[in-house]
Image 1 (spheres, rainbow, N blue to C red):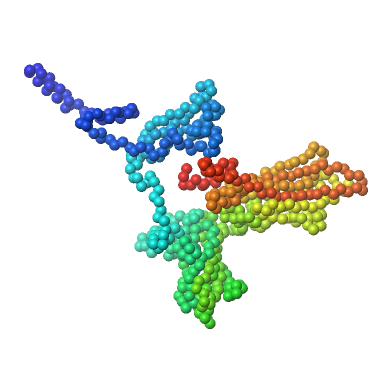
Image 2: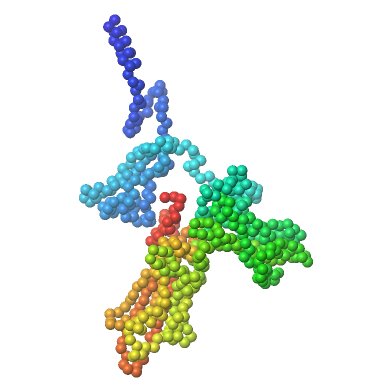
Length: 566
């Protein structure tokens, strides 16, 4: 008995001296639940079931009902297709990378097999980061709530709640009258970036626009480098003519623009021009634009009413505004008028540069010239300031004489198929080389461009938005070949939403066709036709119902197409 007690005391002392035991590492094998109700409940909480089945997720499956090359997760690929793959373009497919633990689909190729086979594994992937999501228990974040449908009862409430926010109403951080605002902020400011609202001393530069109806709302900010043009209706009354701020010139120029955001450097808005429009629509440009003309009542008419404002902003390449001007159109109202239509516009020009007119925003507009230019070594696209002389073809004349037509060019207008030509009289005294060069100059002009803008508003510095012109030559085997025709084919596609597709040029080919010049006997003449043509081809693929809406044309997407998603 004493020996048993001594052994028990010794065992108790040994347990007290041992370090505390750590919890066992969780096993990767599933554990069967306890069968008795007296079992100790588990201390760890299991995460919810995965929302995304990674085994069925395939981010490289782009072609509809076709096998994508090296896409090991494409369900359209067969074993024979996998045997021809060289690698797996997407070796790991996961769901939300922020989860602490999730399923991951691993794809690889067994090149030692004959033929090579695809290997698929589904594993549990653990996120090593300590800042990870253990359980996605916020149910509202897993679904999109249905928006409230506007009705006659809740329309005013929804307009008050969402009307101004849809047009970026004034944030609290733009209040320039806070106590902590001082001159030291100028040293910590950033420059204007594309789309950032242009700030003024009191809020931002307003460009009135319609909200949900055609009535004007003054809460629409003008974005930096965003060319806009709006029209809206404003309610007026001749009796209150001088009390309505939105029809006065002072309302649009009384607030100075900040040269850079949150700075103390200001740029005043000057009056560039004033055009007066009569009641019958006739317009007259005033000589002096330094006089502020305010609305006033004269002979039962309200004169000097602002009908249109055009802002012109000059900026530097560093994103700083250095000049702002406004051009006004003023008119008169009679006492029967209850509303007026106002138009507003804003444009931007970089300092020390010449603005080039656009042919669409962003897609091409039918009837406007195709924009083209050259690319010198190590620089952007250089364009002619006259868009109607950038890409041209031979212009027909009444005499149909090529020697007379030399120098006469017709612009290539988007969407317009054109053909022109002339007749060339060849004599025995003409030699091959000078005649060939003269005909090339006649067909292509003095300066045939190298690039064509893919969009109507492609910028010269964005070289990737310009399409190089491909040159082809069709000739015969002979000692002297002279060019007789130039065929320009412009391939374009509908880009963007099906609701509002934008025209985008994807390929331009210039084909020169030659013919053999045979030596004529002395005193003999020969007349040959010289032709030039332009053809626009729509290469858009129609959307097929029931298939994935992925792009299936060989077109290059812009660098920020998927922003902010990867």
